[in-house]
Length: 197
View (cartoon, rainbow, N blue to C red):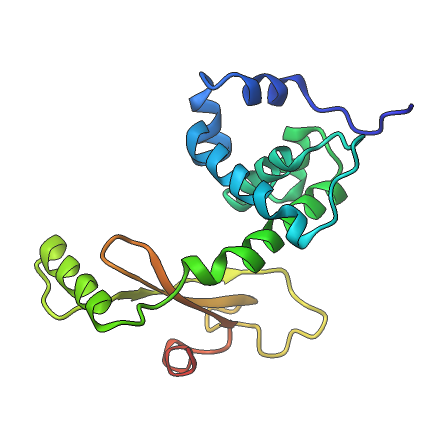
């Protein structure tokens, strides 16, 4: 059987030897223990979102999670990720999309959510007070403009700084856990983003 994808020996070595913690932190922005927890969670829900991988598949779910984490934690684009893992740009993009679909469809709403009960809100308030000494805070809000490639239909995507962007707003609790997020076009100012979130 012909093989069209050959994993670089570096990734094979790193994946099987957990003493390469520095490689994980540099390329995946987390240690091996955290990486394998994430990979296991994605693998547990993979078949709920995608059809099972073929038994001759060269890149298993763990490998695809590594590809996605590298791409999402670096600003170099798919070409750098593809080169690191020895895959094509198309495969790098496909693996990232697949992993993100599993996370979005199976974990996002359970992990990123506002408290629904008064005692939970009070825990957040007390946490801010104990950590920062700031009373009556129920969340911290901030947001960046994230540059994007210009769409064909780019009307409304240019931000006040003159480039196409997403305007993102996020709210975190006292433990820096995301409670809410909103992603809008770059042309929306912070006031409009806050009002519509």
